[in-house]
Amino acid sequence: MPVHNVFPHGLPAGAPQDLLAAIGLLLAVEINVPQSLANVLTSQGAALPQPVTGSALVDTGATSCCVEESLVQGLGLQPVGQVHVCGQSGLKLQNVYLARMSFPGSPMPTLELPLIGVQMTGQNLISPIGRDVLRHCVLVYNGPMGSYTIAF
Image (cartoon, rainbow, N blue to C red; front, side, top):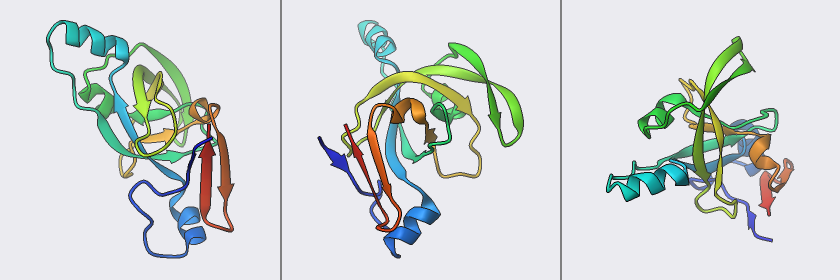
């Protein structure tokens, strides 16, 4: 069972337990068009959009993964539905997009799943990782050691 136990952009200076508590559990993430759309675009000779890459925060309090809405729109994705999301600003109707999510440099599998489009202004994140992804793995958060392990 492979494991992942590093920060996506290397460990910054400081005690690991303090950094993990201050920054949170970050994973490198890549958001791409779903495979079905990639197949259609390829068969039509159209160029595939470049995947969006960035950092994602593991959020065990989030039911579902979200993504910065402008990024999925930049991939040319259209909403497949809407859901009510309860967040800091109360209940809000948000678009849902079908996308492919992968985690470069980790053993986490590539998943094709619905992502809720949200506005994440003021954050250096492109996605919180919710329990819809975490249900596929074993996550050990070791606060005293400042480390984590993800296994499949």
